[in-house]
Length: 231
Image 1 (cartoon, rainbow, N blue to C red):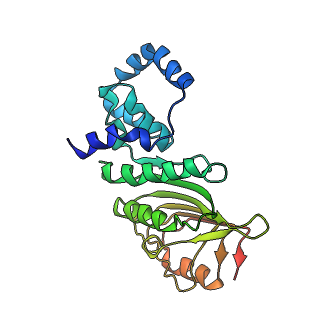
Image 2 (cartoon, rainbow, N blue to C red; image 1 turned 90 degrees about the vertical axis):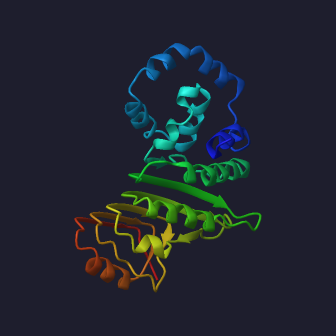
């Protein structure tokens, strides 16, 4: 059994299970699914690339024909803000992503959108997981990266921001970066040689960081700063 087959067979433990109502709805739409299945494979992959990764993977249950389309997508999108409501959902999403990323067959990633607000209530930090995902994305030469990642330590305290890893801060592939609620470490070397658009919002930043950006981003066309937290 291949890694993909083994992963697909164990997928129910990693995904948010479809409710009976959702399963019934899927079954009643078989005719529409059949029509979509007649589209060229490349077009199906383009359609899937516009969905959140959790919905991309759920298409594997439609038929054998759909089983591996999700491995070809070059957009990894989390449109929802995960973390505030249900820690069980967060655990499943983290496990899903850990298993999905190594199976992607695309040569490069066009867009990666991470939107997580974790609740720090059990001493478990997901930041190392995010580091690993970003390292994978850099190897896949991601072009468009959007990040909003932090921990809510206590309702009466400030959120604990995610610090951008070095592998991200020296990427030569990123063309567009939109980063919210994160932190750039003081000694971080910012060297985005291909960056054309940079948006930083509600971010911990130093004057020195701005100097590095202006010096080391020769292709930069747009720089937007919103609600910067200077330190």
